[in-house]
Image 1 (tube, rainbow, N blue to C red):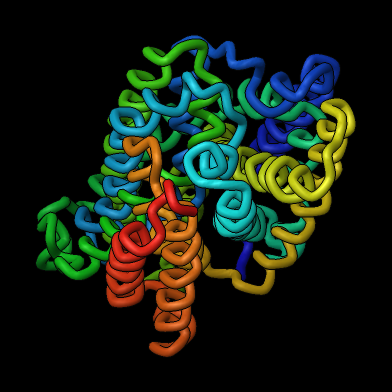
Image 2: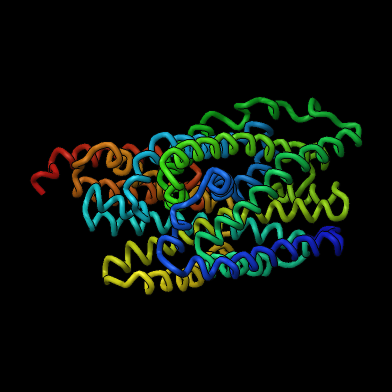
Length: 467
């Protein structure tokens, strides 16, 4: 890894931004710790003004930012399909899921599983969903480590540790209120940096070298250059997965009412499509600027930022990258802690609300450190993302969606479908090989088919009325 020529002003801006995040966490602590509703769901009181930026920010993280820029560098505009599928999944979540779950007054997706199935399904579902949300947190730690190491010229491990502990601190202190307020600031920075400033300055820098968009390699302007198989894989992984994640559901449940939850989620999804196109465009500009000579394509966005932007503005854009990473990391971390405390420990032992709140705060620290260590081990953001969505989409899509619209689905069928499809999908991915098997279309496709078949057959063999 190498350092780049950032100025003292840039570093001051980045440090100032990180300090501001910690201050918000400290200021939010008194409000958040008052009740479980406050700590987990910001008292279910978010208006459009807070809800839409927060939903967009929790969805668009490291993979959507430096991951999309990397894909844009390697494949051109077709690299945007990954985040477009994520965004379409968010829109579907608004239209299909949000209107059903907000009136239930639940805290977690696993709690919903108990309402539709039984306590065992809730327990198993919580384990699966918590594994997914923890891996989403890991993807953001990888992104933070990547950018921090480039900017400060330190090791990836040190960068991951420094940035990760900041997220852990403000989430543990302020819960969902801290996450919401920091997400608002982070969304503003993401919009300013990734959608507006960097594409404009990048285009001007490329033009200044006498280069133009039509000088990109053949296929870079084709929407299908990356291949139909990869587009379909992303559809199966992310479109379905975004309807199921606890991090997304927990944000949906913060809406003041159903209308805000539905419409606000759809608006956030539309914003995501715009973000996808902007981030991949930045990657394509980086390919032109460096004549395809970057040794590590995942550095396309951070290196282009510090090489073309003036002092101060570069620091602002790097802060915008951190904003994207942190805004997804914080939502994933609190979701993981909520599931483990509320749906796993809480099932095994009944706890008072105040004790549960403090337990979740403590778990934010423990799980945050675990996520940082996993990020240091894996080090590749798209691998971690593929693992997360393979686990979630292959096992829970059919039981969850049917559970939303069928009042009496079979609990035993759901358990068999979840466990069976998870074993098949993950096992097949390892059979193909680590880590490429998790990015292959076959495990997710087979997992979804097994999920559907086991649920349908199980519902016939063990109808709810006879269980």
